[in-house]
Length: 350
Image (tube, rainbow, N blue to C red; front, side, top):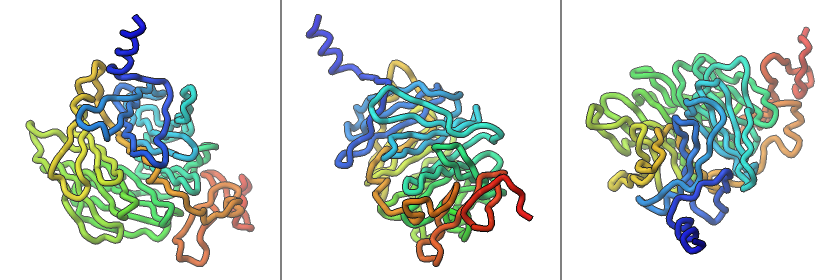
């Protein structure tokens, strides 16, 4: 009996109630959100025969769209459109700990990105806003409004830029601003119905999916140069929509339709790996958001706010590194910045 149990343990998927991030010298793990209130994780280096290593039943509803991770804090964050909340879970190998980090008086959240240097979450919602959120306290500030059908955000605290995709059809845009919401720039208007955005930090290139008469994955350098169509499929009954994507090292990973996960070289899609064993699992999943958990995506870098949060009582939001003042203090919604330009208060300024 003991021998049989050992054999079954080796050949069958082993699901846990905890998550362990890969080490600094290890390759990425891929996490996917499902419509069944689960997060599932697999090792893409196994190849087409990869199976889920970990399966986590999540708090929230059935519309978990986007996620990001905090490598040093051992946390994964995700949005849930149905509950209008943002959640986090612990990923340090201990018993699973999930909690709500943002709730109350919110529109449904869609996209999410984490600034690992200054410990800020950037969240976009169905009111076409971008919020900046402290994941420890839940304090939030409405950073940008009237963004016209925003669908996803990305952040690069090492260069000081916030990126987003918004619009539908002829009005679609790829934009950026400094992390304080200022210095807005249009990177490109050559988009059509963008859905999901991911940043390649190594090569400073943005990737996104589009859904239209043609389903596409496109890329462009953050300076607006070298627009490229990486992959395309015709829309219709014989082709599934390209939905959410993530980039890590040499590869892009994406959901095709809601039922399959695929991988290809990020420079040119000449060969596609389809992880069929993830589809034939005994517990079928409809996949939504996808995330590469890769320590190389969050390198050590000094905070422009220093060790004391820039002296700010609440948010320290960085401006361009080249600017004379590298950050601005900002207050949560409903509070005001006092005359010292550092302290937030409920008092009304005269």
